Length: 306
View 1 (cartoon, helix red, strand yellow):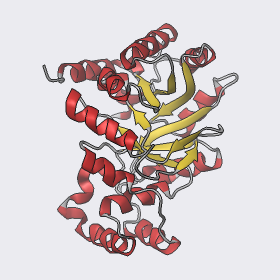
View 2 (cartoon, helix red, strand yellow):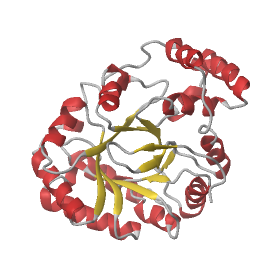
View 3 (cartoon, one colour):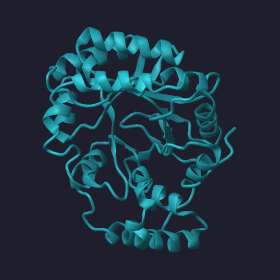
View 4 (cartoon, helix red, strand yellow):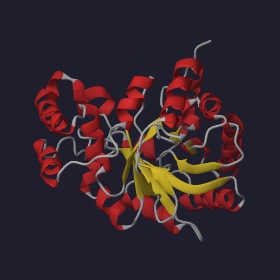
């Protein structure tokens, strides 16, 4: 039984309900504290737990969720997008997570050096074989999403996980509306902008959020997260490092702001950081190959405490 009332939304076009708030696990590399945070999130209704093979922590997440009723999401790294590599990567993730089935298996970033049809053929095989329940993508723009969807024969891509917060709003250039119209769940990572919201630069914005929060007896963090999940296709996966932060995050659900309050927040920083998802100078490197992800995955594995 959960200690709070985290609301649910439909996952994509499916009939499955997922919580509007889950927990992201990027940089969770130590067993004890991170395990406690993950278990607390589940206890407080944030039963969507997101990880990735690139994070180097699937085994830690697996131990944390053992015996719990969760919706587990993970991702295959771009350097594993060849058909056989996708299947091998999934099997390895299943073993590290200690589960027989992954609820949501996502392509972590586009890799234009591998035909998307080959990658999606493997994803659909995994779904048909019962190793995964749903197919998702991450960091895909509209054209990349449509190309991936067109490559599937009998499956739907249910979600697109992208960065979205009050301060990083490039998805509002079209992707947010696209997901809403096409019933694709937009899973927002870094919904608190890596803590940038609390810097001196955004003091005035915090003042606005604080004044609105006082009316609802909510914190700045809770107002910021509620603003995101008020949007039809959006669910959030904030990272929380301890139980106190988990409880605060969970309190972003179960209440609502007025249309006027939501509009006031949206218009306070018009156009803030509506930049491309990947700056043009880096797009050829990040999206047109997968070699970088192998090195990042190796680095993350080495960062774990002894």
